[in-house]
Length: 302
Image 1 (tube, rainbow, N blue to C red):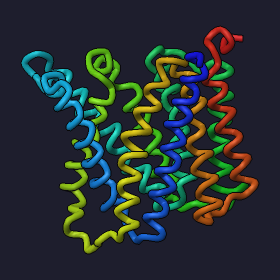
Image 2 (spheres, rainbow, N blue to C red; image 1 turned 180 degrees about the vertical axis):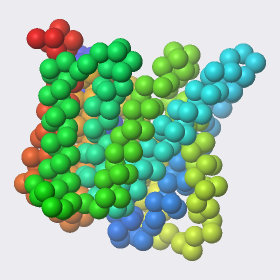
Image 3 (cartoon, helix red, strand yellow; image 1 turned 90 degrees about the vertical axis):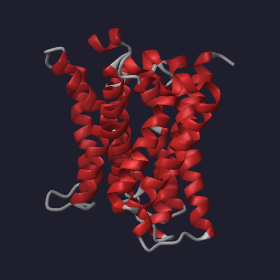
């Protein structure tokens, strides 16, 4: 099997796992009566415990090295920003969007993050967007408009809260994608992700205090928690990040469209979420946006 095929399969598999996890989150919210303020702290903490526990056994010196402020105080600051403002806040706002709308809506709103990254890059490079970049921005805006309004100029097909939380989730994706470059040059990304999950779990536990929420999960609820932790955090991230070096981040972002497609199909066919022609047109616009941003640089200039 070639690296291209293997990398494509791994990135699509990881993205599909995220889509399944999002649908499981929707099931837990709509059928099991869970709340995102209860689920997210537990999910993050357990996933962080698994990843950090693995690296504690494998290489505990490397595990704690980012916190060595005498060696490099910037690493600790970068890890805090990456873990709390990026990964953890993205996880919470993503699941909040799902709770307020659907798994398909949550994933597709999160997928406008490449446009946010593009705008940040243009600011950093002190240049305006190129023609193809303008087209990708317009496609993203049209896609979000079609999905959230169903073509109506007088009202939203989703609540304003869901729209805001979805856009915030995309901004958080941009943070955790762009911020930790220096950290990733020094440490394994899954280890950094483990710290991010662990910090986020502790932070949101202190904020929302899930132990004070009067909720006891059923057996199916426990299975759902296990699914979103192992499938949505540990397995999905491991598959996706294993495929990125084989095909590059540009192609990986294109194949990550398997996440909203998977979420939309499952949430529509299994969970009964409505899916209209407007949603399909919006998905198509977002997909074309990802295609444009995934083209090789020399093709972009043309």
